[in-house]
Amino acid sequence: MSILRQPLKLALVQLATGADKAANLARAKVKVIEAARSGANIVVLPECFNSPYGTNYFPQYAESLSTPILSQSFTALSAIAKETATYLIGGSIPEVDTTTNKLYNTSLVFSPTGDLLATHRKVHLFDIDIPGKIRFKESEVLSPGDEITIFETKYGKIGLGICYDIRFPELAMTAARKGCFAMVYPGAFNMTTGPLHWTLLARSRAVDNQIYVALCSPARDLNASYHAWGHSMVVDPNGEVMEELEASEGIVIAELRNERVEEVRTGIPVTTQRRFDVYKNVADNN
Ligand SMILES: O=C(O)CCC(=O)C(=O)O
Image 1 (cartoon, rainbow, N blue to C red):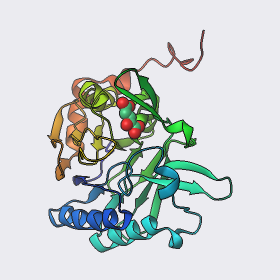
Image 2: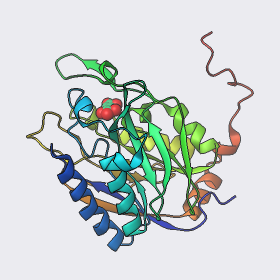
Image 3: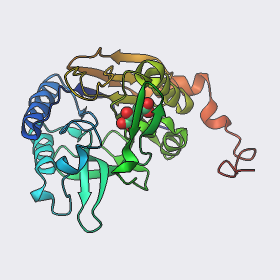
Image 4: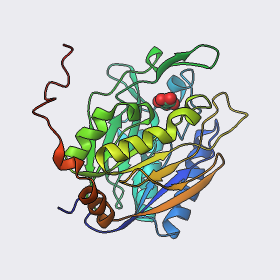
């Protein structure tokens, strides 16, 4: 069965971001136009591309999406998607729900006509504490989303997660079993877990599910309080890294094809060999 209806070019924009939201949105527009001119059909921006990354920044930069026209980032992303006629996976932005006052780390996806296709609120919040290296507690200010996000494109279905979501294989597995040809994760790993796990996790989710996996980071800025790992990459369904950036701003484009999915799935047919009769109670504790 064809899960990818036609070949497509996927672009990851490893954006250089700063503290000025309007400047970040303007820079995103320039780079998405550049990607589209290079033939990209789907373009991805990084996690928190419109603000610095840090719990202290989220309340200040958060936008309500309840009246989209009033959201600076929503309107900008929709207009960029329309102008470039691309599917735009708009990284993520801090969102405030004004009825509950809760904050979320939220990704918006737009169609080539500028219509909203999907909204993903980061499900697994980035709460880690590695003594002497990094402590980060998104849950101090953010609330988690509660849904797996899958959206339909003319190419097929794509699953969407944000950064730390990649550490949870269940999310990608569920999306793959629902027919997604790719998982896309806007992300911003750091200088401790980046070198340890970024590539490992991307390749793992790809090879677990025999799907494409794309991770899109901001560029590294050593003057910022958070140093992003960079290394945006596209991994193929065999777990092979197709394209990868270093730490500075750039764009990578990879061509995704159904033949590659089929070739890998035929050679090593794990997608049809699963034994849910053996591990159907995967969520039980004992
Ligand atoms: O999982 C990690 O090591 C990093 C996650 C992260 O930076 C994030 O969720 O924003």
